[in-house]
Amino acid sequence: MPKSLKEGRIGLVAGRGIYPRLVLEGARRDGQELVVAAFEGETESAVASRGRPTGWLRVGQLGGLVSFLRKQGVNRAIFAGQITPRRLYDLRPDLKALWILAQMKERNAATLFGAVVKELERAGIRVLPATTFLEDHLAKPGLIAGPRPPFHLSADIQFGWPLAKAVARLNIGQSLVVRKGTVMAVEGFDGTDATLKRGGKIAGEDATAIKVTSPAQDMRFDVPVIGPRTIESAAEGKVRTIVLEAGRSLILGAEEVSALAARHKITLWGHRGGTGK
Image (tube, rainbow, N blue to C red; front, side):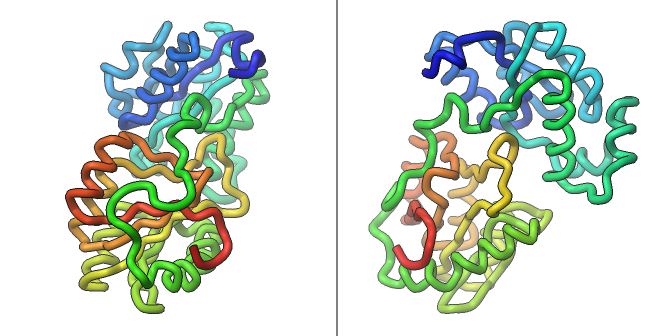
């Protein structure tokens, strides 16, 4: 680990799922104990309890988040784990959050988290990439899991990749499902798992899902992630292949992901950009 990560305290802003736990485990392997800011109704208590120390907050307590991290001497922070989307649009904001919201022209996940990042950095807390301590979990190019790719994968990538990038650039979603030169589903507010189910069911069989980043993706709080549930959703929708952006997508629960991909005969493929394999 770079020496700079050994200097000062690092805070973990922890959301749902196994993502925060993996960050904590990765940090511990590197000799770091992270301060954890946990959220009521979101962060798992078993995960939060690993923090040294842990502070419990309500979603919308921006002032409370800044205050807690500063009191603990935190000078850098990592965001890990989702917040339930509906909570982002049903906030009970404190005064600092109200002040920030009043200045926002657009309210979506990117702008809301972007505003939180700016407020933390204004308070002297630098926000690190959300992949910090998880470099080993980044998708690699080529075959990642499951059977060898179908013969039509190159054509699906050539067709679907630029479209997925365009959708991501417009801040609509990060993934879509294609089959034989036709877009079956585009990710919206419902998220990747629902898109896999919708698109796969429309396609009927042999569909390819593509998940990408946008050119303006802020990797401090918005990293494409898949896990075991993603593979289960693909299986339910009869999606044949999932294409990830190599080096910019995280695979969480890799062993279970690999086992599920083999069981359901779903190919997980890493692609570095451009068209074709």
